[in-house]
Length: 157
Image (cartoon, rainbow, N blue to C red; front, side, top):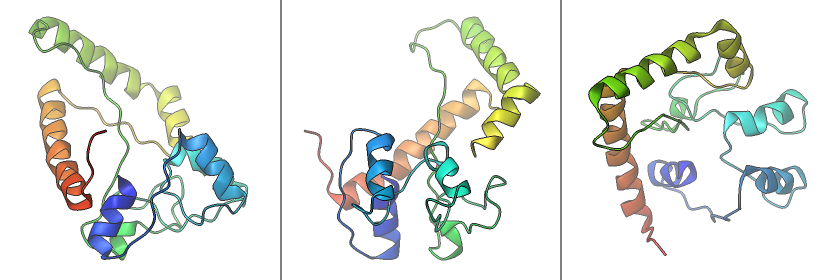
């Protein structure tokens, strides 16, 4: 999807090669079987730091503290931003008090200095949100990526 967004905003065409996960894709990138990959930071950062891969840009809206010398795609493709995110969800009819308890526990965990340091080393940046803010974030992401799916002509199989 990150590559499709890039293609859409940059007005270029690239061949998408599907892989069953980052590991085989990175393996082929390292071997020269593919020329470019839109990888998550945790999947690629060790190879970039070791000099085995050359990072061209990060897909986040700004440069990453983990690789501060690498530009953000947005610096040369206006409007580009693609981040991988994870969240904790619950069934729709889960009582509010349980949702808030899960939210508080999650935010407490990601505020832990040891966990924050480990995530930062991997190039990940935890975001603390209320459940309402997270719902709004999901709605915005759904709208954004829906446009990319439509533009790329992606269909469910």
